[in-house]
Image (cartoon, rainbow, N blue to C red; front, side, top):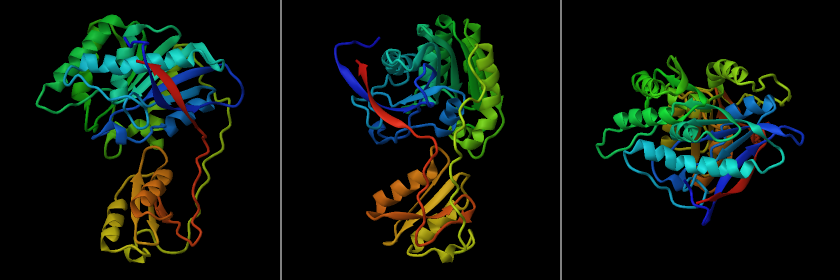
Length: 355
């Protein structure tokens, strides 16, 4: 358990429907990217957040200790996956302790979800049988470590341990072409969990694009996870009807500048940038490519708003303002290429997490 002796501020994104609530609450937990967690971007899970906000939920996406702009130092128990999950679950508990004090939160209708390392943390948190939490959703939950340890068996052991202690129903999603946790390891974790008393439904779906591990971060993943999630929520007595009309994200108009596959048409960029554009043309939707007047370039695909990400990355790399060149399968380049704004607005908060 976390000690209340000191406080660590966690960078946290909050999506809320119109009104004052109280709203049922979803806590969505992120994974761990390769490298230093301090350099990890702030996750928002826009596709998932949009689906829940439309149905009257508030969605909270905290960056845990040591990730992105959250304070504190990231810690890990190497190959001890049971302890790794519980360490991350400390932040989940502290986040919930904070948000349950907010008047707009329905304290009795809470769902905890997570992707990858956030999924492992979610299932670890389930052992605490926290008041008001109705169910858990695990999107490709787990953690891989280096150093030659038997991380797969350690994951199976962790889920076996969690299954002995949790009474909460849970819904699991693992894709066939997940490059981290394929169907084989997912079934082993699921068997260990339910054989030790855990309540879990495993949805082992087929391949998703080039890597099912990122399914929940894609707008195209909604058709996989929402139908099963809708049934799960209904079984829990949670709302599923759409009650909020969110405006669609405005489309960026196609221009007549060039065909999408005309690599030579790109202005400003040199050979390296043209080669990067060829790579971009093989990427999944949604995707975006941006350029700057000094020859800078960047591309982004999938995840939270690739248009926003590509413009930020391009400007960071080039030192100049960048404009969109292409989105999905068409060119948008004009002298006044617009910046797309997402229709789902968020607020970044600093949430105190006692440590």
